[in-house]
Amino acid sequence: MSEEIIYIRSDPNDDEEATSFETNDNESSKLLSALLGSDNITNEELNIYRQWAICFEHTVKQVHQNNYCFILTGSSIDCSFSSGSDYDQMIEVNDTEVTKPGDIDDRQVGNILIMSQENCTPGFTILSVYTLSQNPHTPETIACIESCDQTKGSTLLSNDKYIEYQMKVISGRNMNSPPSFHAGEAMRDGPCVMLNYSYNGQDSEIGIGLRCCSWPNEANEWITRTRESNWPNQALIDKIKTMPCHVLPEGNPNSKNCQLEWRFAFILSERELIWNFSDVQIQCYVILKTLKKEILDKMFEKELNSFHLKTIVFWKSEEISQWNGSNLIENVQKCLLFLNECIQQRHLSHYFIKSRNLFAGRLQVSSLL
Image 1: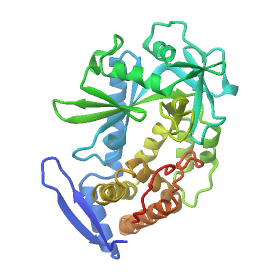
Image 2 (image 1 turned 45 degrees about the vertical axis):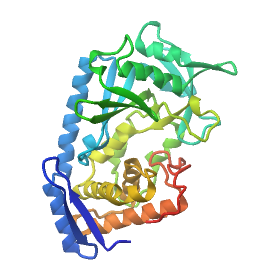
Image 3 (image 1 turned 135 degrees about the horizontal axis):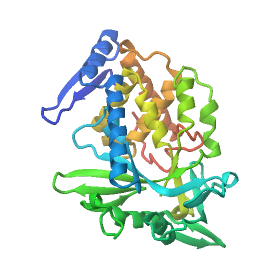
Image 4 (image 1 turned 180 degrees about the vertical axis):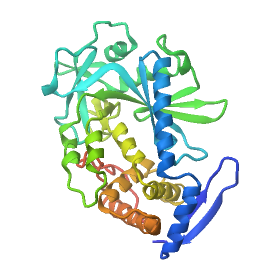
């Protein structure tokens, strides 16, 4: 373990400036926290990001006449955006909902899909078509129709076919494409469509999400979980448990049904947790992302991503009760030790679906922190 923490101040208009801090000095920890605070990496700044994201999403929804609901994600809403970062967002496809078999309501309208997790690894589900919208000419319904796969007497939704259709819509190669979607080259990246805007060299990653009426049963453990600290507090838990989760068009690569599986995602819940981080929690996360960019990426060749680091901070936040400027570096160390432990064991539990291993099929290397 290194005896120094290096923070690189990155500003598009300035040269990068690196500052190192001794890890055994509370005063250095306070200084680092103050430095990060001067870079607006604070809870107050997170609240500004929250307000901006909500306004942006509402405006875009009106522009697209409620056909598409955009949800901002990633570094663009969590104080960690830097030069070279992608603009991440998710499209929640309207008029299409996923429900459990026991929660079917015949009064529901639109495209109704049924989740079935039998024979799926934790965190994934297969979707069967229960009913389609009475209007077969909407882009949402066409996407479902073109993605149907007849398997053993059931009509299932293929994630490959679904995202191929949505790629055509997003890249402007489809008659249903909104005018603002006519942009750059489109490529698939897992459950996302990657757009490259050649005029500014900026990438935008757009996830495709279907709204779930309720959480999968395996995620209910999060609501009643015993936590050593008071994070998240009960009020935040009560708020988050009312938020929908989504399924994304990506299957488990090790599954024989990979093309028919969809992955659960808790994007709204996760960003609400981020937006409720204290100054030191968000500063810890930003430091981890800096270490990833400067050190870990060279060791693991893209085996680790920002989602893993966010999950690490979530788990440690449930254990660590003190998040103040004087122990920022100590808490960064605790997160790194936990990350090292997870790498050694090649197991990192998903924060909401504890039984899902985020390192499954990853880290086929022997490099250690």
